[in-house]
Image (cartoon, rainbow, N blue to C red; front, top):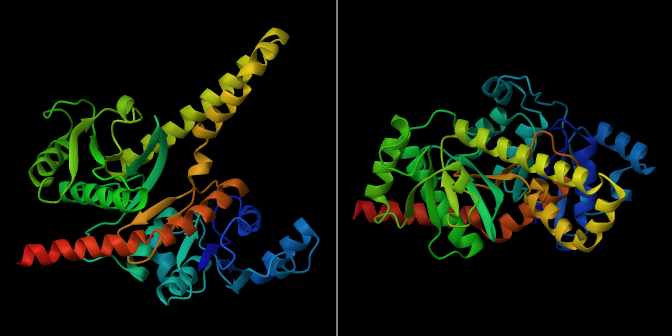
Length: 347
């Protein structure tokens, strides 16, 4: 297996990307390699500065570099960048993936360019109008899949229906959940609540759920999303991205507030000692970094969007997560299910 990693994408590139790859390599299967896509001179100069080695192969023979000369910047217009920066780390990474020279592509770069490139260069699975980012968040005794968490800011009801289909297929095949509960993110649980999009999406999901084998349980309010009663929530990418970042912010606030409370005085420090194992478990569960990036469901090959602000720890977890995506054959199973559905509709 070859994991393609955009070495030049993200706020902390290339240092965090390089460190994350090096930290992850020995936690992957011995046959798995990482191909850093980016400027070879820049990468090796950072290797010398960070590790005192002349080149990255001196650290691991399973990490290689594919040289590129351009970088898509955060302020670049997505479509223009994909079309004109043909030797950028992102475009080259997509082409390597499409040509079968890699099994999964990871980037923390320009989100719009990543989604445009994935759709235009890699291509959509037949039957899917709009691919979507599937983010994983912690929930009570389980995990929560958020569809869409940032790729489609303007959606139609058919898009949310397909998000629910993709979430259901993904959860069944990757996590072994027989009938994953799918909810529609809304401001209330009643059928009549919400804006035009959510009300029409509710009606469509209710009508098509049995036919498409979706276990649709109705509207879900944000406060109930983490209860463990729902496995995935679907929404448009604008709302989903706000929900995702708000959740991450609250998680950080809870961790900081808890730490400050426990260190407030000597008595609180002493009393916290017996609770340290439980506190560490809680801290780990609330750390969004361990959940890695978001898989871009709906495209023909595995593409993973890492956080733009990814540090070395998040890159490490995202690389490990990407290997699992490939092993689980998430994309192949998604393609099979939509092909099967198409054939059934034609009969």
